Image (cartoon, rainbow, N blue to C red; front, side, top):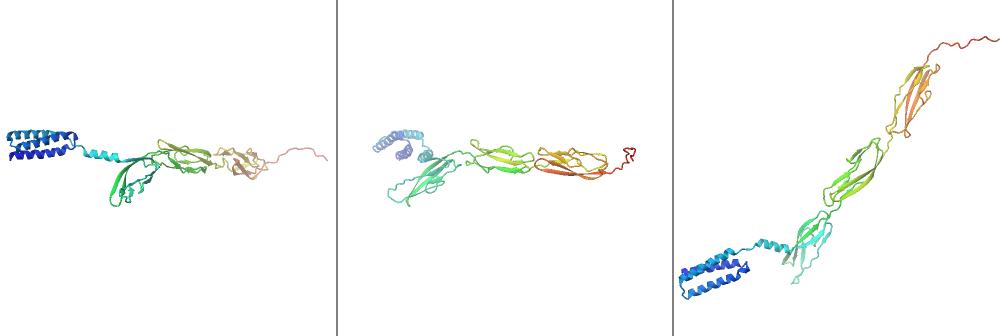
Length: 339
């Protein structure tokens, strides 16, 4: 019984080792020789060989089998399966904004009608209009079925990035009047969804331009939008129409003088636009602003001061009161009367 037990133990151990060794074709010959040796020992036992020698030989075989078992290295099945899947994935490469349109050829040995479909981002018939910003890799599954059995195939859609320049909208010529505030903000977008840097030239660099009496003129404003690689430029015209600022006349007051007194008007004129101003003063003073009254000039006078900058006129009136001064009679001449 001891002999039979040893033999059975060897056989079981041998079966286990042979199952593992199948992963390595290089060990096939060694396994076969071990099996043949076991068979020979069993045959000798059946013919009445010495038990002790048989036991020693079986033990020796067990040691050899243990050594073979230690040498067996199982392959990384997961890694092998992954490599197999990758090799079977068909890669389809397009650029952004291109149309993906796949043709499918399906063969059914039974001549059954076959229907197929794709997973997203393709539609069911294998089409997809890519856009800017869709760059990347997309794993798609193609499924074909005859209604009973189904076959699947993986596809990899590779969309290459195509950079395009930013787009500038909302840029048109502007016209305002002096004194108005101009606010400007361009509408800019990037098809690739890139971060955009926007610059605007003066006088709208800060987006707001508050005009004044000196702002009249024409300005060329440049708008630049950059994504770091490509940029777009647009230029528009800003016209600021002149709004005339009328001259300002000061240093005029009503006057009261006595007959025989000198009347002197000295108006001061300023013009914010820097225009040349023409000043006129009505009689009895006159444009020189000087009037020497006589003893017969008593009364009230309204003198008009007019300032004209060529675009507009400003008038101011000054009241001049000349008071009467009674003078004694003056003997001019005495002579002999002629009869």
